[in-house]
Length: 468
Picture 1 (cartoon, rainbow, N blue to C red):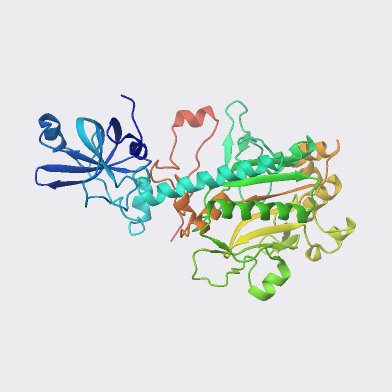
Picture 2 (picture 1 turned 135 degrees about the vertical axis):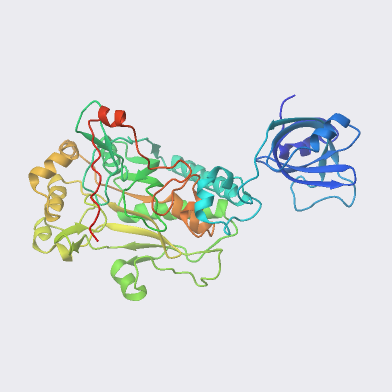
């Protein structure tokens, strides 16, 4: 007999079905045993009676979180026994056959609670058990629906989804790269992408015009409470669109998304406010202001765009200029001499997307003239020869004609955490790492064998112990 999901048993009243799942609570009322069977769709009540003697004895041995399969007749519950809090609360299954598929040890923590009361270390160590709790399952379903909506919206808008490489080239873009040694090219390294920045710009050179991707990004940053070494973003790049048109697109996307998937939420202001960086810092003392009228209302969403960021910021420790966003951002200049003359006064075609006091996305128009892009790197302290070595591929591409283009990348993890009122992004990710980038479940990062190191022509140099 083919298995039926719990929620679909409502269609089979009076008929025999087969269902499978995890044992939840067990209750005995006299000689009758009640079991709550859980699968991904719903919780369903099973009824075991002494009439089926062999099955009844086996039912007495099962324990919570065992995985079982049963066959039996779907019946309406007796009057007074209906549970309106459960989707299948009007029915139950009178079990005629039982098979234990897998036994389970006692779980290290309860999974029928929110989970907030359990230490994060324990939850992440047993993440496969933590994910059994209803709150996290609902978060993952909500995430999938948001991503699916984004894909559908962008397809209608004429965008093409393109996957870009994970093994790429190390380039100075801001955060540290994760490096991957090459076995076939000793002494050389790939890097994991901090974002698909250069690839999506090269796709504009290729004439794709409207690109998107649900992109995985990797940044080897110092530990932060609400950041992850790897994360997901909705990555977008467009040709022949100005800043206003890009922001309009994002505004339409998120208004429609909220109305379709989150009808209980209320957007504070439409159109979304567009505030200059200078004004935001003056009025709110932050470049990600919380514009909610009632900050205690969890269903209020205050979107805004922060625009006109400075192009450069001075790094005191390194005694050099660095870009506020990234080097590919187009500076607001009429003449290249302005970059050389006073970098600190140059503004950028850069914009951030904020929600309830959180930055949930960022983007910019891009420099598409090779001489301007090259000069930006020079201002940052790079020599022209080094720029040509590191970015020769994109500068060469620009020599063959490149349209004006720009993009934006809303973060999936941060957005989901905000709309689901979760305290951090780890609550909306299936397998997150700790705040200091450890995977306690897989015990990663970990050492590798000497043989693996030899194959890669690598040797571990352990740091010297500091003198006290």
